[in-house]
Amino acid sequence: MPLLLLQGIWLKLTVLRLPEPCGERSGHCGDGSKLKLLIVGDSAAAGVGVEKQKNALSGQLTAILAAKYDVHWRLIANTGVTSSDLIKNLTALPIQEPTTNPTQEFDYILVSVGVNDVTHLTRSSHWFANIKTITELLDTKFDNPKVLLTSVPPMHQFMAIPYPLRWWFGLRAKKLNELMIKAVKNKKNYSILTFDLPFKPEFIAKDGFHPSKLAYGVWANQAAEKIDELID
Image (cartoon, one colour):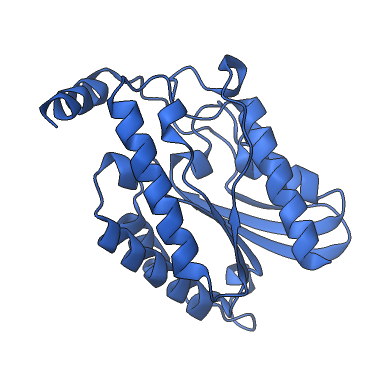
């Protein structure tokens, strides 16, 4: 544990901090049946690792969906967000009221959270309770939307993190994923999205931590496939 603590401090002091990409965080694109999408969460949801939102998750996902649907979308995500922070962000949103505030109406929601819970040492019990609270907030505010919860990535493959801290983070990520699955196992409107990503240099941003444009493309394609499946 002393070694893990020292490595954690070293990582915090030396990791390259990339800015969030520039670009629109809401919009409308495509033609077809209407699809209202909300993306919420952490720096990965925000698109850290690329310079423009069009190359991030939101831009690539909405572009794919626009080939089939009339997509109205919004992104609410920031660097450093934990599950506790996400609860605060969701609590601040108004309840969906289509007749008075149609911009708050969403029928598909993609969530990315968990990496910061690993690095901030969120306790398992706290994480489980937070996921339950997040699902309750989403169901209440948006009238039981279809929700994709992105699994915590396999952090033991993040080469920017030194060993054995990388190994320990990987164990924690696996545990949080198990608890996420448990938290939503009886909710039919929830799906766990575990996207397959080859951990090669071209799929990792220059900080060694966040997705690259190629990785966001993989994530976007697999999210779009899951949304298609849910619609069908």
